[in-house]
Image 1 (spheres, rainbow, N blue to C red):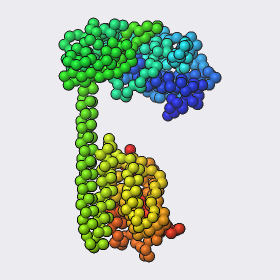
Image 2: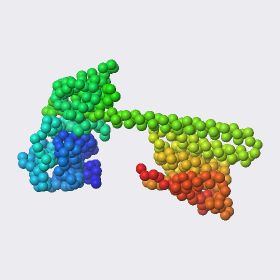
Image 3: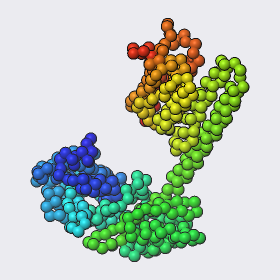
Image 4: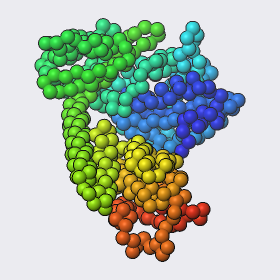
Length: 489
């Protein structure tokens, strides 16, 4: 399905500022759909104003939908939808007198012109919202439903006047309160004129024993949550409905999120809506995850320290050995332990069990080059990026890369040594090539007695379920290819 940006760019004359306004509107118009108990379709004028194209759609979570199929991308000729044409031409909200039965159910249609606020001007009209209400389950509305509908009417008027979405407002978070979580309606003075059952329950959990209706929300909330400490300034702004902001309050172990939507109609603030959500359990889980994450990072840090201690002990033992073969074996062990320690050091700073492997690869490459600098005057070079890898893959890949680089530098004595990285969506392809002495005559990977190659083969084929290939290079030297499957994102 094409995106809003694609449809606007291909079929309309709207500019970048217009598109940004529509994105802001669509990011928050679930509020209008839920308060209206209605489907919303955003229609933009086609090039040359020959008709309309549907560029966005929203269904209500508070009532039955009218459109079970997606409308986005549909085109309507000029004159085909009378209410849309009227709202656009007359710059006003239009309401149909009688329900439309063409879809088999009674539907009330309304259209709302969308105006973008412009400094020092009356605004610019961009599109029209079609609001369609399924009346099949119509009944005498409750006070909650009447409050919803009145609030929806005020928001619709704000859209037509270019006052919603709020210009310059920070993007609304995905986890912001929704209409069904809890709703308070405030008057101009910040007093509660209506409290939904969910909103009242949230305040009961904060410790409120009286009724909310008629109370000044800011003062009540401050008394419940800030009796022994300075009052949060954001709280008073949000609880009075003076600005479009969000805040959280906590009392007695309960955490409640508040979001204010000022209602500004006809140039004056007539009140506000405050959406409320009890996020106690959500915040508790987040804190548990943060604690667990900190614990995991501390474990990686301690493992890294222990590995460095082991490497230091091996290095000390190697210096005491008089047998060259034994000293060389211990030095190889030091490098292997060091490559694992690098991964754990990186994980100790990472917020998740994923690491930027490019940093690890560069440190492994530098370590191999420094160790071999006295014997071979060449520094390995990396081409391409590994990207972010899970820790379960990062450790064996780092060890395999260490072994391949060390083997090439020690036995091939090359003048050039490169690591070519080519990741795809589901596999990681790594090629290590050099222009050194090449493979010995009759080389066979299956029968090779090299400890380093046996380690690489075990890591790649056994632990990572990948493929390992070692071939002579046509121009001289050796080419080693690794193909490692990546887990699905």
